[in-house]
Image (cartoon, rainbow, N blue to C red; front, side, top):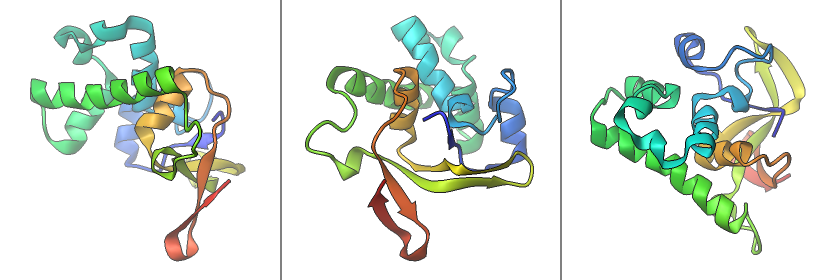
Length: 158
């Protein structure tokens, strides 16, 4: 999980909402707004849903800006999706038997960026961001993922 990167997005979003403070590449998934939200939820619990707290969360600000919505209902729904994934993984574990393709994080090998450098041994996130953020917040170092193969858009276990 330490070498999983977020997908490339608009630099304006990266500069505004991704964490830049520890010297690591801001596009490491652990620095993404959603992963930081899950880590904040781990620290403060349900108090994160208080309007004053929720409105200050970079993930909520990012998602509201990106989707063009700003209602309290939208913010709560957005937050509760991450919280639900977090609580599920905390209670049941990540992809316990039987291994569920539906629930697995999807990645592709390598990370390539003109701005932030390359990491051919890392992985670029493809799908299941709520689960990936929750695993990071819960301290998972390694998790089974599905490898996204570019040709034919086929998914394979890593």
